[in-house]
Image (cartoon, rainbow, N blue to C red):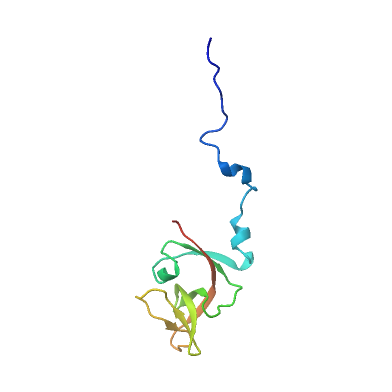
Length: 127
């Protein structure tokens, strides 16, 4: 007699988490609060490395939020994009990096053209 062979329709191992799946996950629902005011940018550079923002990361930026003290923002300074933290130091607003190689930039400096484009709400980076 020939042994009966079992057949399976799936490839690989079944996931124990399969019983707990709720359906599809749309990251926009969790990460984007104001879709019409939100955009994404990719980071180039290490100015915010101590804040956990690395070169190559994707930032989610919301233009509808107020760039208040301690918020990370995307700014255009003299035509150059940068990501920095807004800091109010002795009543003066600055754009501060989070590494030891760069210096803060005072927002009220008359010789500097600064425009805040939005507040960073999330950072996405690979492990």
